[in-house]
Length: 219
Image 1 (cartoon, rainbow, N blue to C red):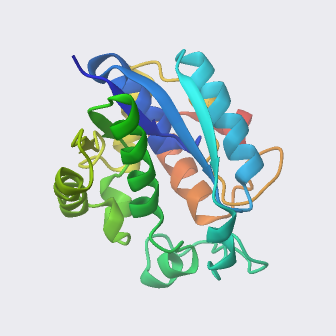
Image 2 (image 1 turned 60 degrees about the horizontal axis):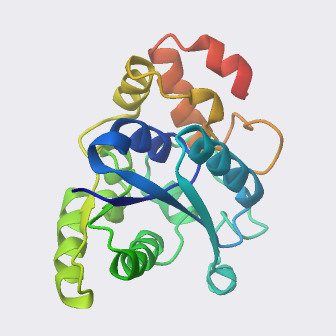
Image 3 (image 1 turned 30 degrees about the horizontal axis):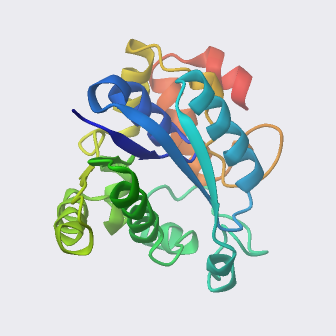
């Protein structure tokens, strides 16, 4: 019997990963991380709504020390990047040291303690082009590591690994995933800023899939 944890940020990728995998993988716990990012409050709120919608447990884990060693724009006074989608410079400007590796290792500790055999996260094709910890190779390698660092040996699953943002929004609409709960913005604020790289990815994918109604609600 499958029993799974999901890394849930409130963003598009983790929301859709949960929507398409909840029943197949028996997801019953979502972990959200507060590492001092500008949008932490909004991400936590969105993640809670999503977990309530799917009737799974939700836990927030604080990693204050990670902010202290992160100098890039997600947590500092620097402005987050606008435009320049998918460039090396834009990726470096929002890099958080070993973020996915750290989050997955924490999830693996939960898996070891509570008997979860799968960990789900929202890695995808578009982000894999610039973020190496969003690739299939990374998923395979960290799953291999857990064979040595845990007793439960959970498998890491990335159901969207071969999907672009356009594909992800399309699947969300086909599966009636509640996109109105999405929080993908790098900045804080009641609504998405519409200018940061993450917002532009989401907005462009919604436009591509004729999701104007969501654009009006989210931006």
